[in-house]
Length: 295
Image 1 (tube, rainbow, N blue to C red):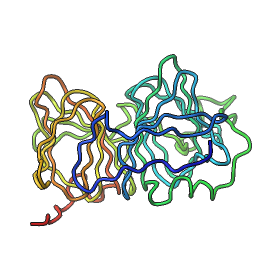
Image 2 (cartoon, rainbow, N blue to C red):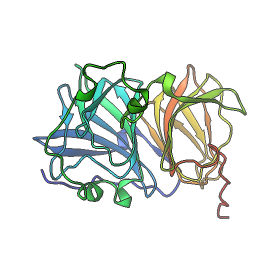
Image 3 (tube, rainbow, N blue to C red):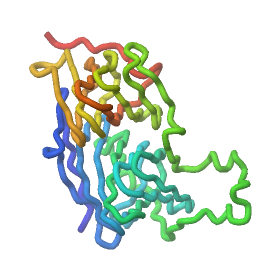
């Protein structure tokens, strides 16, 4: 099938996005792999989706579908074993459920399901496709004619490689020990690990203990979340109409820039969610001035 832009669900107010209502899309071509997409939000600031690969599934690039974009990306593995390669350099990384991969703009990438169960990956992407950073941007890049899946230069000297050279890798695997951790300074009832905090995109995973909440926060960018586990309530006091929301696993939520919001765990067991904020936070996470709301 020929190239078609992905759907772009846009919201103009704080919005609950139940899993059953998420926009579905099929991406790719038969010879380069077909990918299931569940697109949660795609505004002028942030793009959030979940994509799926069946066992044995993969995506590569073709002339029409060039997998190199003008955006920072975080790929958080929800289920399965996911391999991500840079076919230009031969770099290959593998992530399992609960782990993530981060790369910056201008990184070619191919994805592979390396296990026996379906792969599901939560993806954050900014600047988003609405800014011309996906298909139109990719078509400006020279097409790769040979795919590489091994960095041959390390053979014969691995793992004694030079640390500075290894630091120059383009795909960064992110497990719990690689994250930048913080404890909610107001409540001490929630903690967050950051996968990235660039000028374009901030992505993290927040855990809220049973019966606890976060402090009130606001961001200069749009925020979009995905609930991993537990029952999560969100209070958005500046919203018009409904200000209290209840979310379950696989649900999403969108919060435009400037809206105060607070997360609560009213259930049993830990409530956990992944969030993306774009553009990235500057001068401290969650400290942006509150926008003056209309009367």
